[in-house]
Length: 236
Image (cartoon, rainbow, N blue to C red; front, side):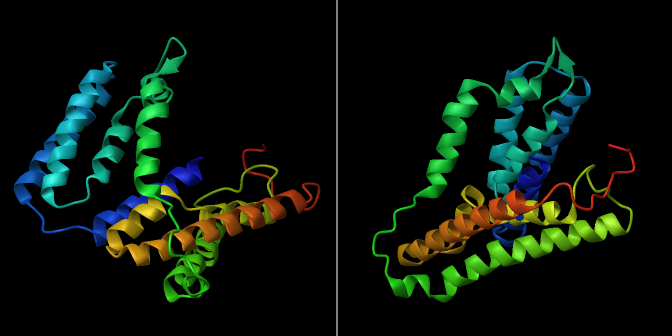
C-alpha cells in the first residue's frame, strides 16, 4: 500500500513540474496560507471534517488559479488529516472509509480519467511509438527504477529489507508498480489533446498494466519463501 501511495504521489509531482501553466505568485501565496491552516488543524488534532473540507476547497481553488495542477491540493489535504486515534479510529481512517469517498469521489475520479473507449483501434496503433513507449516505461522502466533504488537504499543502510522477504519477492513487488490506471491516463490527457493519440495512450497503459500484473503474480507465486531469506535488523 505504501509503495502504491508513494508511486501516485511521485506521479503528482511529475504533473506539477511538467504540466504547470504560468504561475501566479498571489494565488500561490494564498494556497500556502491554506496549507498552513491545514497544518494548524492537524497540530491541534481538530476532529471536524467540515474544517478540512472548507480549507481544502479554499486551497484547491488557490492552487488551481496559481497555474500549478490542483491535484497537489488534494495531497496537502490528505496529509493534513490527523491519524491520532480516538475511540479506536482516526479521522483519516474515518474519512477513507466514508461512503461518500468510496462510492462517489474515488469512482468519479477514476471514471473521469479512464474513458477507455478503444474506438478506431488497429494493429498499427499497437506498434506505434506512443503505446510501445508507454509499455516500455511502465513495465520495464518502473520495475527497474524502483528495484534499483530500493536495493541501493538497503545496501547503503538507509532502509531495511522487510523481515522474511527475499530479493526475488522484492523484485516481484516492484513489477506491480507498472500497473497504471488513473494517474497514467490522467497524465496522458494532460500531454495529448488528439483523441486518436489518446486511444494509443489508453492501449499502452492497459497492456502495460496487464503485463505487469501477470508477470508480478507469476514471479511472486513461483518464488519459494523457504529459500535464502534476508532478516530485518529488528529480528522480524
